[in-house]
Image 1 (cartoon, rainbow, N blue to C red):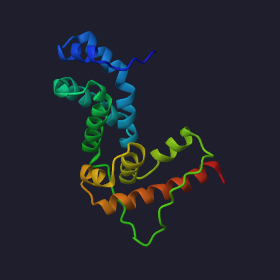
Image 2: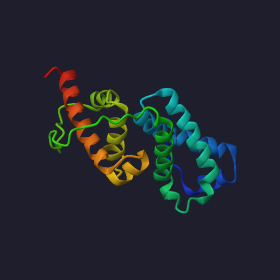
Image 3: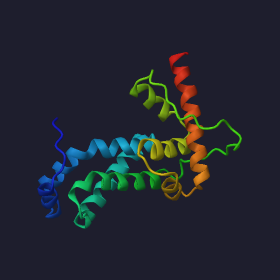
Length: 176
């Protein structure tokens, strides 16, 4: 299916509660929303719930969007907040010793996206959530900490922990 990103005309039609336009917006953006929710939660049912909740809010609040070109970023923000709320009970943050290995800022380029996705899904929920928000979605540690209700240092240590686990899991998956 051709994916056409929403434009200001479509947004106006959605605001006017035109069902066809709402469906078109949903169809053109559902993969982005679902994928983000699933990567944070690693649970299909919860990701579908977040997908639904995100669109309810989008359709209710779209009128408040000032810049149509910011629609996708706005929808991602809503999705992240809803995924975090849905996953609060799942997220556990392992207590890590501050003297553990310093962060490694290099990811080797010898693996593909499918392998990385598999490794990310295998992370503990808390480490996965922090990794996804900071490393994949570009949130700062301060923003991530606020969203998850943890300290900035916990956010930083969880990313370090996640990267270490990812490195080990990818090496295991590749049998290096």
